[in-house]
Image 1 (cartoon, rainbow, N blue to C red):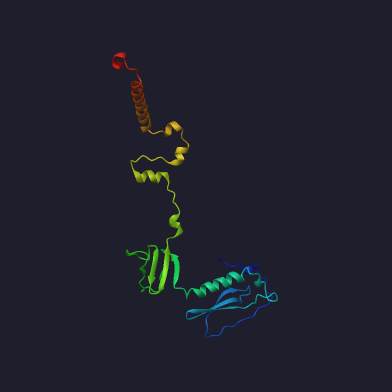
Image 2: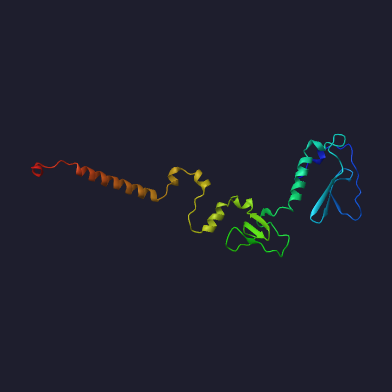
Length: 205
């Protein structure tokens, strides 16, 4: 995400001419092409040089819209080499050393870090590979494609059901079930009425 450098006003700057034997990369430059922020990599460390100060006499850099996120990114970048654990997306992460062997620590089963999410370890380093968020997003398939996949199976699409009347939505099984239910109720009513008939005098004497 780019920082809003174009919104800053600069009143002073210190031009820098890197030594010929040092490789400095300009991460941001002024309108005339002079570097504003440079980076030099030496071994596992990095050095950054800013050619303007955040003081009011120099620039509007002290307002924080650029300085704060820039320092946060520098701290995060510098701390990554000291952290033994990291996170990445499964399928997108590639180990720095192709010969390194990463083994799963969250499961006894054999897993491959290239396409299976989980927690893996290589020596003292650990990485948590999470599946991409795109896998959790539901995909919509056209009704014609569903009908072609299922073949002779009868398919009812929700969009079509919303425009149908209630009598057309009723399945063929419902009338049969309703008739059986009514028949059971009638039989039950007949049994209850037969138990309430008064006994004859001969039976009571």
